Length: 263
Image: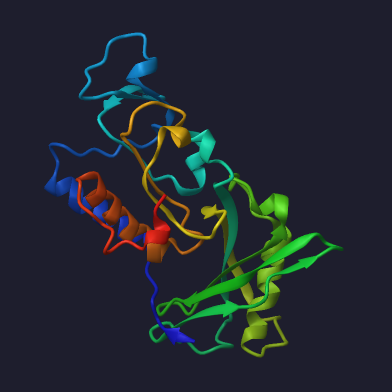
């Protein structure tokens, strides 16, 4: 039990984008539905490119030339950085919204919850319990936002969030009422469920800094990364992004960014 520390990520991000677009309308655009399909360095390009912009980012809408490339795609980092696969991998999480229909009082303004337990593996079902449930409650509706990973290994280490694993949802439906001492779940209602892709690392720590040619597979030293927040993105991603921006500008972050976050 800890003091409430919840935020609506979508609203936070879109508000920040809106403020930046208003402030920097002449130099900032947000190009949706424009995936970067590959990155090339001038050393492998047939046509000459100005040395001030040595990178070509090939997108579905044409190429973009850049001086610096920042990889901020977390679990999807291996798409453009194949040498980083295994060091950073996608991890699929499951989330539910559940309505206790007033069986539990609304504490959304005062607390949020984290339930830690020993990680487990069931040979019979081949499902892994990853050791953490996370829970918040809407102060407005009383709905519980409850998530946690309890699935087979091949279902979890995946970049496909186009579907939700049914048994993961059923597990979350059964687990939440028990935390509040409720054996009768007939009144509990599943409002919605979804999955999302997080970025995990082999050592459980974020990866923030300049990428070497060994990791990019390309010449040049203008590629950077902030990724692998291991399910703690709201605590780590914003501060890592700030640190990375300052590093790109040439500032020394050794007395501020944990050394374990570096590459």
